[in-house]
Image 1 (cartoon, rainbow, N blue to C red):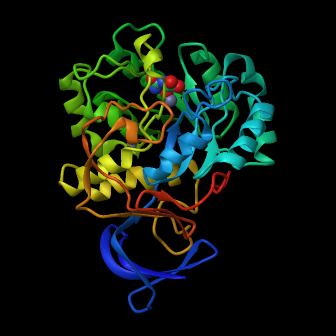
Image 2: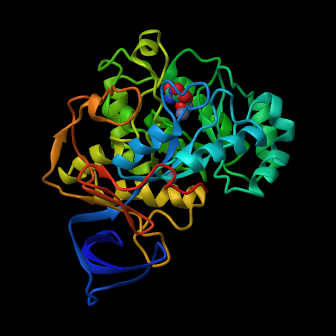
Length: 387
Ligand code: NCD
Ligand code: ZN
Ligand code: ZN
Ligand code: ZN
């Protein structure tokens, strides 16, 4: 199969023909003839930080609804987080969840292994067992406070005992000020070794990580909102407008853009549960921002596709290039829309991005197959591959 069109290739837009065999790009040329796709064709996104709940929290999201939401948002691969109920802290629950994903996921799916004080001694063994069957992207996200809290001492031991990527939710448990809490936790972890830092919300922490061999992730919500914009809670908390502006100025230094898609019902939000859904709107919002020139296209595509693939080891994802999967998102730049929570596909039906402008994908291709066209999903649940 050959698809012709305006592709984002090697950092710029070129009109070319992309030849696909068994889901993989085998040739990119200017001369071959094929089916012409209208619009502009970007690499599909990867969201390395989603909470698809399921299990006992199926009332607010499932792998099925979360991955459908991802598909509508131009995301071809997700990394799900282990703070489920029950939590993914041994191989048994890991396998159970992967089996569920195999039957229900719309997009490609991978899952992190949770670390808690209780499984720390066995974590290397558990990793080995999982890796016999699946591609394990990382241990994490590791919480330094809350129910799944891991002490710095334990984290340091685990860091020494494995070369596996570890992702950290960097909030110091004893610090009241949330800016200081993030910076402190990052400083402390950087002394232990290399980590991937989830949802960094301060410019200072981004600086520190950038000067190290560790990598960082930022979220749309910390870049777009300050604590004055909403009463809804999230961890790490939204910051002051000054801090937000500093974070935006430091955007270039972040390695990954991830949604931290963390759905809760409106009732739970009123009770103060932290987290926002976001997997469906991240790429559409950033496409709009790219189109308007508010963010650089190259920088954004690196963070939404290339870098997540490199950092987490998804070797066939992240780029339109020979040898990679044919995972594309087609946008019609003119198709600007106001975001409406009730039109999104997460179970919770609300979004803090209500009323913001975005450009949603017109078509999505996963491994060469058209999976979404003009608002219609063309595949069944379970289409996505578990890694
Ligand atoms: C997340 C959740 O609800 O699972 N909540 C959040 O505020 N981000 C957990 C997390 O990512 O810390
Ligand atoms: Zn977190
Ligand atoms: Zn860096
Ligand atoms: Zn999270």
